[in-house]
Image (cartoon, rainbow, N blue to C red):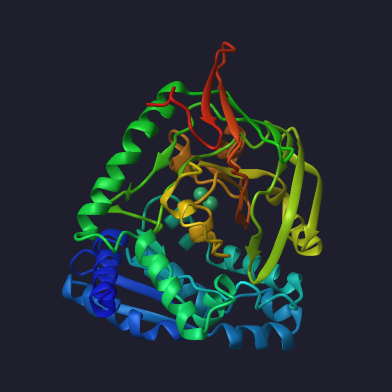
Amino acid sequence: MINFTEYLEKYAALVIEMGVNIQPEQELVIRAPIECAEFTRILTEKAYQKGAKEVIVLWKDEQLSKIKYTYSPLEVFETVPRWQANFFNDYSERGAAFLSIYAEDPELMADVDPQKIIAGIKASRTACQPYYDRLDNGENVWNIVSVPTLAWAKKVFPDCSDEQAIDKLWKAIFKAVRVDTPDPIAAWKQHDQSFRSKVAWLNQQQFQKLRYTNSLGTNLTLGLPQNHIWQGGGETSNKGVFFFPNMPTEEIFSMPHKDHVDGVVVSSMPLNHNGNLIDGFSFTFERGKIVDFTAKQGYDVLKHILETDEGSRYLGEVALVPNHSPISNMGILFYNTLFDENASCHLALGAAYPSCIQDGTTMSKEQQAQKGVNDSANHIDFMVGTEDLNIVGIKADGTEISIFEHGNWSSAVQ
Ligand code: ZN
Ligand code: ZN
């Protein structure tokens, strides 16, 4: 039997100290579902104990959101009230840390008009551009974590009682974020070290392209821009604060060259997008652009995603995760990107992280586009890793080095 209260305290301390690494006199904005009030109170108290000046909590209720999406007309989602945009733009300018608890019901929004959801994302991206840019460019620290909610837990463990499902999901989360170790903070420092050598090796190789193949039908050539940067584990903000944007995290990621992707990639896990499930899908790329796609489930949702803007038809992230990652070894499909993306190699439609290319964060949008950095209101991860996935790195002189064999790091990677 685990001591639940003790684990909860350790988890909250980990998030505050290693996730956002709160600094004295700093402001902290927490976005939390109302169901996660207990954990949010513990987080808030820990943040104050570490010297936070003010903790501002924005409560979300997904049932209320669904009612709003159902009854409000499209135009309501096409603009963001000025006070709301000011909130994010102002707090980010003041150097606040941003913490989100991500725990949605994976299928809640299934009947909602996807146009409303996409309009909301676009409007928020436009109105809160300064906020998003500061986060993307490393000005502010941010962290995303998850806490079980009943609807989510029941989706993951449909055959369990309510109580059992919640309990099982807590245990899986505690394990994934290493809260089940004697000293989680030390465990995360060590975890960060394990990324360093592979990141350094990949950055030194400067592959021109990667070739993905597996028996699902993936046969994809993915170009990487010149001076691309692989990252993984923790990050350091422009102010020198070391933080972990995601907990858990098992990925090493960079950006594809937006115009140099060709071939077919087949999904290996369902994608939950704002409460809509898309499954059994594939994309065909020509010179970076998706020119054809298929989906066994959620075709219309996927179509709407791709129609959001020009950048939604191009890739913005390439991430390597071994098939034997601690999360994939649990054998649980979480229906939650934060967990599923750390169980599988993945790619993302939409915006790239400018920090994945040298000088990317100080380039203008035009310079970024010229170097192959994709931009979009969307950033949507989808899983492509399988136990038979092979990835070969190809250098400018044609040299080929195996990176992944049968779903895991090849022995050529140090
Ligand atoms: Zn990723
Ligand atoms: Zn991503």
